[in-house]
Structure formats: structure tokens, C-alpha cells
Image 1 (tube, rainbow, N blue to C red):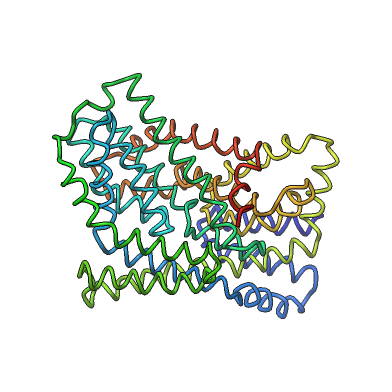
Image 2 (cartoon, rainbow, N blue to C red):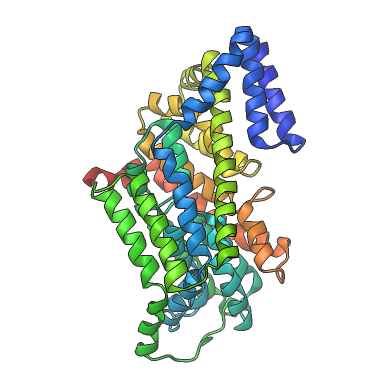
Length: 431
């Protein structure tokens, strides 16, 4: 057991000194393979790396990222918030609740939580502060709702988990709908209850009355994106197209919306969109490939099997083991980014989950729900810093304090779907 301990120490040390996660995973895995198989490691490692990336479904990842970046270059995010605010103007706390709704829909447009926070937060937070909303409520509603993009399809984390586990990406997309809608509803309910208990958090009548004509007119700035998402997801759910084929159509449709309808794509912006998409996609691909090297070493020394046997030997009931796993994932999510958490933990935990009799599809949904908590909890919570970047009037401390009540609700919803797996598997069972 000395060699696995050395490999884990190498991984943790490299992460702690700020080394890129792909480099830490690759170096640790390569060291382990070399200690176990000598010079054959130089053959095993490249085979693992390219074997993992040689996946048709993984092509969907850069295409969905490109789709999200194209739409992120349009005013769709701001238009979503304005439309939701107009339709919810009658409700106390309506602006904050509108933020949740706009973030949920934008999540279906972009699939990337940070993009949702930037697009919706840049208009929502100033608007809420202008109308007297509590600063922490404004910050918490945007940062936490932005995480819905990870669960509501098309979801980049689902594509990564599907590549790591072999679970159908289309099934994961379908499975994420019920938890995504339920979580959005829970966040909106939290806002409503908090405002009801403490009216000072959100003054009443913050928006002047608008006519129904103006409300329907507000939908004119978002219907193109909503139609595109409906077509993309509808093709996947009905089996007319694979996730990769739908992603290609979605990227082309998003280019049309940005370049032809909104006319926000000049040559400079087009280069920025492609450069950003390549950078993000390349980073994720590097992490996935290097994680496969690390995962193959773990399988070589039978670490996943040993962990499974050790936990089952404790004679704890499955729900207790799952609770421990969820707490560990939430803790790890506070220290490691979401992509890294998926690629590192999936090879270790998936054998345990299947040994306990649970569906790998369900575990993928639960894992992504964990990531939603991870992106809003310090010190690595990306949504916190994304919101700080677009809303410099908020301090990091205010944002962290603002998201804490929402994190409690997120964890409660997580445990609901952990203890009742049939809820998240209900919809995939009908396709």
C-alpha cells in the first residue's frame, strides 16, 4: 500500500502548490504506472489518454460550449431577466425569483454555470439593488441560481460523466430535468418565504405596472433561443439525433441567432468566441485524458474495489454509506473544481454505487447536484468569483454570506434525491 499512498501524496502536493489539475493527475498517474509496470508505463499512459478522448459523444462537449458562447455574446441573458421580471412584477421578491427563472432557462441555453452568472447577474444585481433589495439576497439568488446550468440540459458535466462512466448522455439529459426544475422551484420558494418573513429584504411594488402587451413584447427578445433549445433537446429526447448531432445543430443555430438576428458578431467578437471555446474545451479535454491515466492506475492497484469492500464490510445501511459519500463530495467540491471532481471520483465511487445496487444514471444526477453546491462554496466556488467580476459593487464576503441559505436548500434537495432515487429516475423510465 506504499505505492498508492505515494501517488496520492504527489497528487495532493501538486494541487496544493497550484499546479494545473491536469498536470497533477497526469504526473501522479504516470508515477503510479511507472512504479507498478516500469517502462511499460510510457506505453500505457498515451493509450489511456487518447483512448478516453476517442469518443463520439465527447464531440458534443466543445459544440455545446460553442453554442453557449455564441448565445452569451447576445443580450439573451439580459432579455430573459427582463421578461421574467415583467411577468413576476406582481410578486413580492419578484426580481429575485425572476433571477432564478432566467438562470434556469439560460442554463438550458448555455450549459455552463459561470456563463449564466455573468449574463444574468450583470443586469439582475444592479436592478435589484436599484429597487432596494437586500445586497446579500441579490448576490445569493444570482450565484446559486447560476448553478442550475450544471443540471438543466444541455449540461457539460453530464457529457463528462457520460464519457467517464459509459452512461448514455441522452438519458442523463432527460434525468436532469426533474431535479433541475425541482431545485429551481425550491430556490424560488426560499426567496418567497424569506421575503414573506422579512419584508425588508425586498420592497413591494419595485416595478411600475406594465401592460400585457409589454409583457408579451418582452418575449420577442428570447423566443429564438428558447426555440433553438427546444429543437436541440427535443431531437435528443425523441431519438431523432444523438447529443453530438444536436450539439452541432445547436452551435450553428446559436451562430445564426448571434450573427444574423442580434448582429452582435463582428470579426473581433467571432474570434473571441472561438478562442474562448477552444480554451475551455481544450482544458476540459486535458483534464479528462489525464484523469484516465490516473484512473487506470487506481484500477491497476484495485483501489476502487478495495474501497468498495471496506465500506460494505462496515455493515452500514446503503443510505448511511451514501450520506457519507455525499458529505465527502461536498467537502471535496469546496477544494476542487467540478470537472476535476467528476473525473477523479467517478472511477473510485462508481463501483461502490453499483455494488450497493444503485443505478449509475442516478449517481450521475446526484454527482452533478453535488457540483451545484461546489460552485457556490468557498474557497473554489467559481460562481462567487464570476459574480464578483461582473458586479464589483459586491464584496466576496457579501456574496458568500448571501449564498449560504441557498446552499442549505441545495443540500436538502440533494438528500431528497439521494434517499428517494425513484424521483430522478422517473422521467428517464418513460423514454
